[in-house]
Amino acid sequence: MTGFWTRMAGRGPAEVVIAGVPVGPGSRVRLRPRAQADVFDLVLDGRVAVVESVEQDDEGAFHLAVTLDDDPGRDLGEARLPGHRFFYSCEEIEPLGEQDGRPAPARVLVAGIGNVFLGDDGFGVEVARHLAGQAGVPGMEVVDFGIRGMDLAYALQRDYAGVVFVDAAPRGLAPGTLTVLDPELPDGAEAQASVETHGMDPVRVLRLARQLGRLPARVRIVCCEPASVEEEPFELSAPVRAMVGEAAGLVKSLVMEMIAESATPDARDPAPTVR
Image (tube, rainbow, N blue to C red; front, side, top):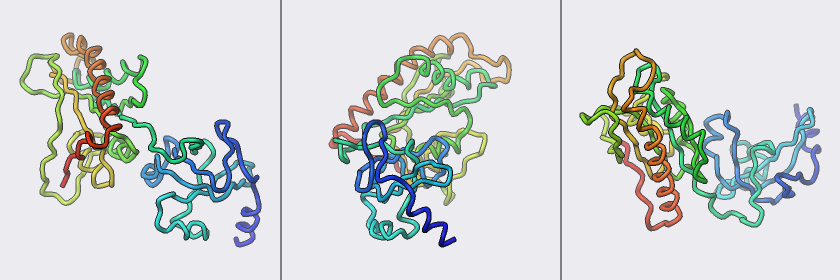
């Protein structure tokens, strides 16, 4: 095994070109793990790192060994000790170039949630689909999470400036009424938040995200009053469907507000408290 690592250490060019920018030892980069990365990589998403070496595996693929720019134990990574040195493919690296470590542009996640088999409960999913077919707001990322609460909690570990949930929620109003909520996350008796694998409770998702280590500073929920959440028909009711376009416009406005707020440190909202 020692011979293998010795052989690997001697492989690879002095630098590679990523997005037209030469990247090699000493280059500052931003980490962008691929969509199917593990939880640990998600925590590192958006972090600034320094390239230590460019290495090539036996199949000819290039990998960059990096250490985190703000890691107090960075010297351990430079000494090739585990836990402080990470490997990423060229596709997972964003050269900083002239930006050289400036904060990354703000990103806001729009999460469409709900069960499409329960009538109007699929409102959030339909709004996400509507937004995906339109010209987006720079920095806005739209994802149809459906009832995948666990996936959403892990997605919130990325460096989002904010998140907008889109959901159907009965509040005793006329069907189709839109409401924007600032979630108040209550204290819980249980020590650990739990999320069903195939369930979606926004409050539980937010609490789990907090326990995993990160929760966006800005959280809004765009709710639509449902007319029916029965198993049939498998479609939105007329008053709810009529509000899909308006809800999409409202979501875009909220996203633009969040991105503008994130650019002004004094205007930042505190992250919701989850105990």
